[in-house]
Length: 84
Image 1 (cartoon, rainbow, N blue to C red):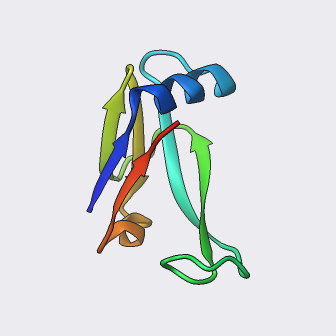
Image 2 (image 1 turned 45 degrees about the vertical axis):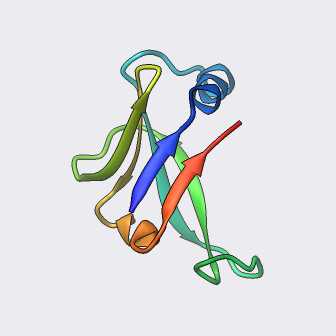
């Protein structure tokens, strides 16, 4: 159960979302049917902001990418690598 964000992906997020050093990017689980994934009927959303209950994180290029404890189950048996 790991989260790894590549330097190139972090740079893309910074450019596309106007992020600065010290910002937080949250991955969260949302219900979305029709896409065959490891968790049928679920997909990931992305938002900017810090939650109090960070469970899994990776800090790259000064940005913290994370899942909170409510959504950590999504990676329970998996590793997630974000690449560009």
